[in-house]
Image (cartoon, rainbow, N blue to C red; front, side):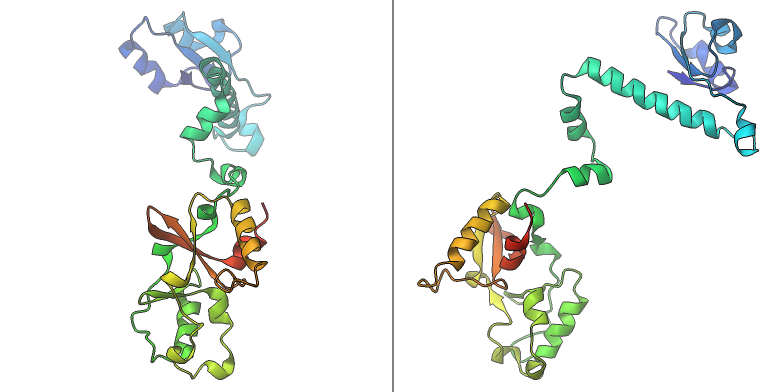
Length: 247
């Protein structure tokens, strides 16, 4: 396919002798007649695809620039691509979704379905090697505000955004060892598989919250869910985040 508004673009005319004459050629141009197009005089068997515009381009914006014709060519090119894809595939939408990232439109269409889709990746949580049980609570607060995710890893334990924000001003000078609820170990997290749907996770957590007789199953909104994949933690979530998510 050749795209030339004038129908006589020299760069394209120079290419013609190097193309196999058995190959079909489609020309997207402003010309509506075979007789007026210079390109077709060099390749008479060309398939003409007219894309005229109603006024000279220099009239549109006052400069001799291919703005209007380029816009028309893009629109017709997209229409042609869609038409051709419908001839080639029974389900254009599925093929498109498989081969195109989708951009903002695609992202909006791909609503999160599993807890993996909404969790904070374990690798995205910064470590704070300078923190330990003797560190004051204010240092954990600073680390939380410096963290892009709001989460902080301290050795083999983790602090969630809600927990960090909830540190009382009277506890800022206390050591983390004196604040047992500030850091949660992996073994104390609630584990769910990464392919658990958000709806399923909400049902599970709601059932756990409604079981006051079993203290091991009780979980508040600040409790941490470990998203498990292949036996390892791939991400984390606060219980409140899961329960508040709109499915």
